[in-house]
Length: 135
Image 1 (spheres, helix red, strand yellow):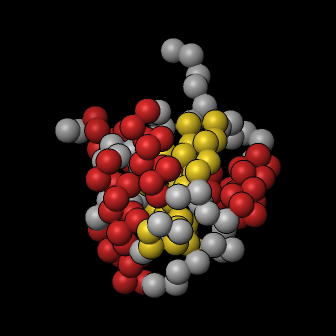
Image 2: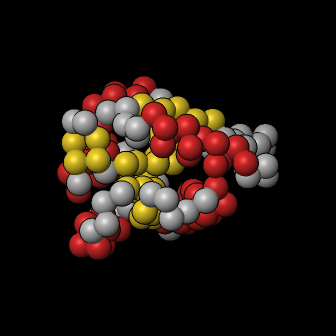
Image 3: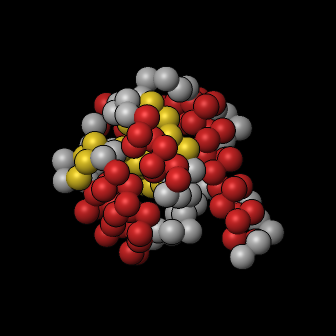
């Protein structure tokens, strides 16, 4: 079987942070990826209807949605795609709620580097594949 790099949907409204995430991932040389970026929840939901992804990187604070509802909206449409939350929202209750509801990882902006993000992506994909193989 031919290797296919993971396809990543990034839902992030801050262009600087989106560029930062892309740059972090690019610095991890052993990690190849295909990245698609959008700025709003509704854009992300439209993209998910037409394209397939291996993982979703999701900011919880978007112009058209905020908090747990942002995660819930994406997760309802993409139940089989691992979701890695990254946010500046330091709210332990929301972190635990999203993880209990199906998010694979919850990272706080500014507290991770490219290797941490790649590890979160790879572990999330592996966990979802394991769960799917046991269904």
